[in-house]
Length: 262
Image 1 (spheres, rainbow, N blue to C red):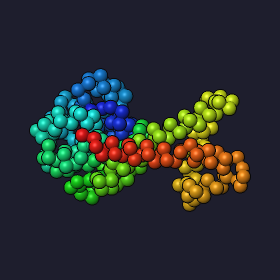
Image 2 (cartoon, helix red, strand yellow; image 1 turned 45 degrees about the vertical axis):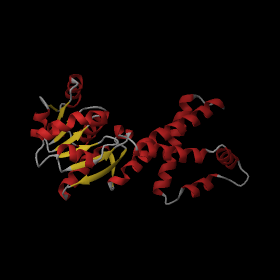
Image 3 (spheres, rainbow, N blue to C red; image 1 turned 60 degrees about the vertical axis):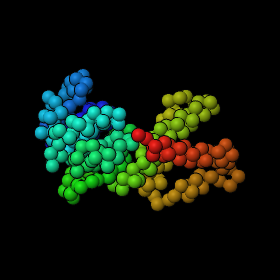
Image 4 (cartoon, rainbow, N blue to C red; image 1 turned 90 degrees about the vertical axis):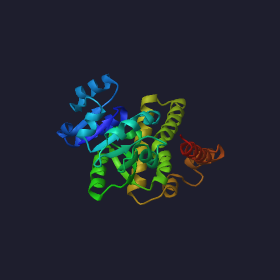
């Protein structure tokens, strides 16, 4: 059975993805949230099981997602410590909360730390995952659950923050770039909606070429740039304005702040 402590956007995304894969799995999903409105909406939307309290959820579920904000974890630790069993597997998705911290504060020995990203909301996410004391069958089951919201990348916990920046913050960086392109399109006379659709389709096609055609970013760039042509003039402008350096600095600064959380 799968349980959720808290039922915000990411818990909703995982539940939606699971039900899209298996329409009957809602019978195996249990949730509890102090916000009763969220519970009512979850039942209305997904027909999942609503637990009376935390104890009820722990009794019924093996896989328990901690779907609450990091600042709530201190309150959750005591609840976990009082209710977990040797069979309980905690799945944390809070930034800055380590497996060691959860283990020390709860005594629970089976812990998974994941970092999904926002595009999990449309089942296209990239989820970084690291495991503590999880057997192979349990690992496969957890990955199968997470595949409902996209791809899963397994790694050592020391690398979680790196992927959190690239994949977690990445959509915001990409959105910022798209917004700049759209603004430029509007400036030269393309209507907003047309510019947005054209740019999004172009970016989707570009990423597919990079992933599926065995070419790298440099190869693709010079497939577009003709000697003395218009595109290389744009590339020169981006370089003069410090575009690549700004992106690198943004990633480094985001990573450093991520490492200093809590």
